[in-house]
Length: 489
Ligand code: GLN
Image (cartoon, rainbow, N blue to C red; front, side, top):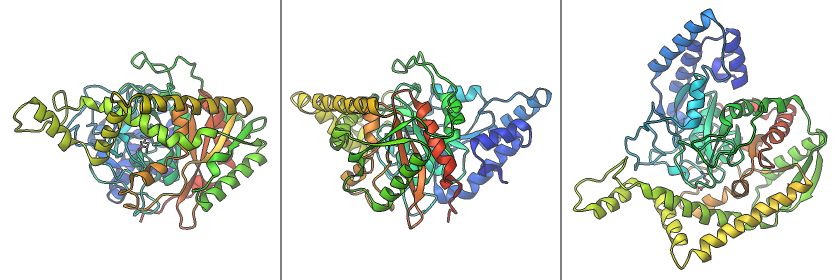
């Protein structure tokens, strides 16, 4: 079997046994990228193949005398291009960062490097993570491997497409309001947004700091556990990373059922606007959980209806403040031929940012301006607390919540680009978990009639990723959605 078809666990086993060498793995993946990347356009930068080959040969040489491997050693992993890497440019899908190559690695990249992973490349995204289709990337959109004229979702669309197209064995994404889960659903792969604070954000270029989280996009749930094992943990470089013990998340996979777990179905997530095929697939999945021994219960999250509005105040406000640093002085693009400093600031930002980013900076600046702060920003923060309270209450009754990930399967390229509100609504079901800071996973649960993947979302209590992973894996093992692969044509 071709190496690029394996899951992370399978590839790891094959490498550990010595069946596949690091060099063979590197070669197989770079070859795969050269074949499918012209169609999928998942990457903004593909790493220097020769440099990885040198490292691969060095690993193989060292292992000859002492075969001791590490979980991510020689594993080709793609990195969303808003995570800082010292060996490759980091663009955030924006022109404003110009030729910026960070002088340092993000904490998560440092952890991966300790294991000697293969950073295969940096993946495409909506500019600064603002979008749901990668169409807001300054460097052109990525495509959905299942149907090339459909979007892969966003903002981590490049990472999800790269995993679905077997261009990497796993990828890193980031999620502010759904950007790991929504593209995972659209591309038929697994995406996990950990609890806020579970994974260090040091070196993740900020969009909305109180919401941003890094997480894995993988071929199956087991792989998400392997990735989280390396990603998780407190980091002195990120004061919002949490001091919570990190266990071996793959232990969660020993139990292959959901016995004794109470599973809530929030009725607000099945209201008007939900596509009937998506609803059908999700309801079928709920049946499976019943078969697997779960206790199913309808619950209510009454403030769900205002989550999108709340998010677009909080996220834009934080973005307007975070993006103030791009002024042409410190790094990235600088507009030339200006009369004075103020003009340089203005033209730099005008040239460097795309329309969606400008729209959000304006919205956020407005929401934070004096006279409007209380009416918008303070109000949104108060509503955010109510949304969080909804979850706290529900999690007194149930252990998990099961919902759709998106109201519809992937949409066509160009379909929503002119209508921001329609685009924003594709995150209807993912945004609540971001506002509440809770862990949530997206896993495949079926296909639409025209052959596009459908995703299932499982949310859990803060820092209870283990329970989320256990349930997701139990479901995955009794269904075979993940075994179906895109033909890419
Ligand atoms: N699509 C949402 C937005 O545009 C979420 C993005 C994200 O999670 N980075 O803000």
